[in-house]
Image (cartoon, rainbow, N blue to C red):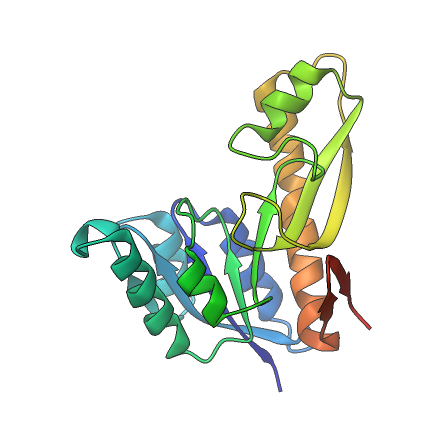
Length: 201
């Protein structure tokens, strides 16, 4: 039986599209059962609708507090009984209440080789630091910022002529490939998390 995946988006949904393309193959092992967003009118929701996937929107401003939004988002997602929740360009931090409801089931990717260069500007920080290799990291989300147990990483060389934009674009390509490959493996094979170590049989 295919693993049930809910994807959260905030923008154009290019990573979502890569997942939607992957789940079209019945051997992939997962199905996208819903796509949620924190705002209306974005291309990511349109991509989901075109694929026949249910969508929902939970806007922070529609709730009295950030905690109330967190609770509402968690309740909506729980209705889809997900095995995995994929943050695919979702630009809101998920609170502890949300994460406690889905322990070691929320994955996010970051455009750097964590624990180096966490935060909003991974490619810029890597370039400014002068590293020769950077990359991307897929991890289970915890209450910290880019601090959760690491599922997978891909290396991306820094070229002499790179600026932040060119480096970030190459990282994004590796990031999408890593995410699609890893979600498929998690779905097909399962996983365990012991301390900081993620094991896929």
